[in-house]
Length: 462
Image (cartoon, rainbow, N blue to C red):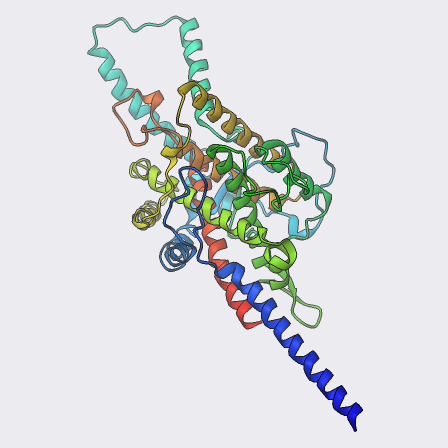
């Protein structure tokens, strides 16, 4: 009689311990997403912000994300011109992905809006330039100053202009005149899991973190990994600007990972498949069981780069006010402009804006050196995108990295945006590709934060 009683007690005790273990595991798994910690918390200058994850979630998911979804479905923003055939400039790579989900469907000219077809967009901007030239010529006729220049001086001015433009740019942009430049419909080529994995993508991120991020203190883990574990902060010993650089790269990396988790290939019965969120993959990349406390850090960096790009949109607003967003359809162009103005109005209302004025301060000479080093590091990251072996991954990588680079260009352009009281060649300018990349890149970050809400709900019910 005593033996069965002992067995019953053992069984009940085991069941109790298993239940408590599951509760703790569930609590740990959900808490890493539910912490109300400031997602833009940094040492030095940005450490005293009053924002929290809940405020950003509420603002993004309830206010700006729905507007972005509508805006990015419009023709001006859904077509992105890109060169996907460039060779990797850093190493020989024959690991081109042959999977069908890696392929990109290129637009034929017939499906493009009229204003984007060969020659139309060029003619539109040529017309604008000619109008500016005529106004300038009229003013020149009234001038009594001899403004003739030698050919040598003209050539020098061209060189100076190209140099000035390069100093403002953070991206190695594709040349518009390259034969391999083609339009891609972003809605027909969505960012999602393609099966591209292994050494090739690992080499991409290894090169970005190891060779182009500013080095944090040494740790027992490889320095290219976001799982850096060291005494104190993983960015201990870095100045503010270098910490910002690391965080925006890490935040972009986290955002891309969330996209792949949110649109993963899932079984759908009877040998069929479908695209949808894969909670197991999300846990693998972000949960404490898989990556320790760095899961929360990675997500904080996503919120950080979100705030940075949000601020760039707000700062670029005076420039957008004078743009026509030309596609050849006047009604569509007016609607796009109105939608973008609504997005900018909402963006301005968010009270916790990133403050770029805290960066590159102190000794002017040292600040210029650090800013150039910052720019060169990011310039290299944009070139690494041409080493991605999956065309679809390369497409979205180039778009998001160029969008982030454009955001940096906006933030660190000083006070020249929207100004007309300075010489024309000194005025702030963005190409159509930069505008499309900037808004789409922020849209991707917004999409990631919205997807986090879905994963939170899945985790609480699983």
